[in-house]
Structure formats: structure tokens, C-alpha cells
Length: 328
Image (cartoon, rainbow, N blue to C red):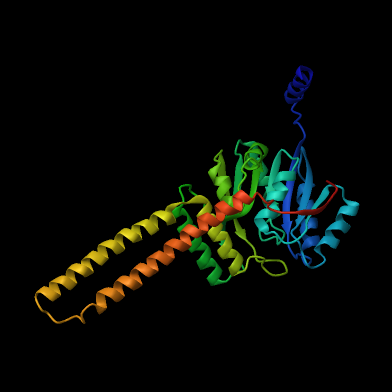
């Protein structure tokens, strides 16, 4: 160990940097149109890096098209390409989690296969890593090729999430980021299911900085985050990082009790002074029933979501099932 330390110091004095390793995690689900383009563009970038060896880890998230065949063809002539194939579709966050748990690099880049996040930013991100930052996350200053509805819902999502969460999660960000190995090791110790990774990376702390870029439109194929999956991601983010919905329900309960007392007082005053402006009993009963029913149903829904998460965690089922690995 001491001998290695002396060699390392000697190399530093000569200006020779130690060779490090970069792991690139690329989740894929039905990406046959962009699989080869993604590989070629990513490889063109990593081949230019000085003092960095690399591995490209593709996670096939149960694709129903021939994405797996394309990846296996690439892996057959490039042993730096590694494949993790799921037994079925488990979702984007599970795919990224599988990649994180199987990396061997000193630094880890997480990037989607659709090339909306430019791989060409990698050298600049590595420069920031070398300056001492441990998480460099992509922050979108412009989002091309996305509908006004998606832009609006994304903006609402981050505003709502940060209003409810105890941890500040940078808005206009995704999972595109370069992360130091020690941060990855911490993330891998977190046992929960239904992960919201961009929130977890904020929660663990460390020295973080954004890198700004214009997000491009997809090169080909369709988005793998339709409204249903966007809502699921938003739900995971809010429930994983906040208990405020429970407090809001409690507040609604107090408000409805006060409102019910006010209705009761108004009804008694109307009856005492014979104002004859109420049908006896009807208004107070209907308001009380509808109001309390609504609050109760809302409370049951919120509480059931938290209970469902507890149930999901206690089952201890794996987040994903791996069918096979290639070049791992």
C-alpha cells in the first residue's frame, strides 16, 4: 500500500494523472429507433476523454421491440458495452437503480437514450467534477419539442414538490447528471422502493452544481413518459419526500369542524329569531354531510397512499428482476 502511494505521488509530481473510470448508465425501453445512434454518439464523446477508461451500461427495461437484439449486436464487438436486461418492464427509476448498483467507475453519468440531453456536455461536466463538485446535474434553460401542456405540468410539478418537500429539489432538472462514486455508494445504501432518484440525490447532500443546457427534441421514437407515468413519478416524489399532505388533511379537518360549528350557530340564531330563511334542518344537514364526506374521502386517500408505501416496503420484493447480463 505504501509502495503504491509512493508511485502515485511520483506520478503526480511528473504531471501524470491517474487513470480513472467513467460508468455511463443508459436506460432503454422500446428504443430501437435510437439505440445505435445513442451508442455511436456516446462512444464518440467518451473516446475523446483523457485519463478516463469507461463502460457503457445499457439497461433494457423489458422492451417489446428489438432493442435487446440491437444492444446484443453492439456488445458482440465492443466489450465496453454492458447490458442488463429485465424480465419485464419495471420502469425508468428501477432501470437507473439497476445501473447504479452495477457500476464499477469512479464517476457515473446518468443519461436517457433519446438524446434530448446532449452527451457532448460530458467533458465540461468532468471539468466541474475535477474542480471538487460531487454532483453535476443538468438544468434545462429551454425545452424544445415539448407541448405547452407538458411544459405547464412540469412547472406545476416542481412548484408543488418544493412547496411540500423539506428538501429543495432543483426545478427544470431530470436524471441527467454526473455523480462522484462516493455519492453513488451512499445512494446504494438507501433501501426504499418506488425511488425518486433526483430527489434522493438532493437529499444526500454533498457539493452540487448545475450545468445549463438547451434540451433538444427527441431524435426518433415516442416519449416513454406519458401522462400516466408522469403522474406516477409526481406521486412518488411528493410521497417520498413529504408528510405535509397528512398535515394538510389535518388542517382541513380543523377547518371543517369550525365551519360546522359556524353553520350550527347560524341555524340556532335563525331559529331563535324566527327568520324563516332556512328550511328546517335541510341546509345544515346537507352541508355537514357533503363537507365531512369530502374531507373523509380525501383523508382516507392520502393516508392509504402512505400505508400502501409501508406495505410495499415490508414485502421486500426486489425493485426489478434481471433476466440476463452481458459483458458484466
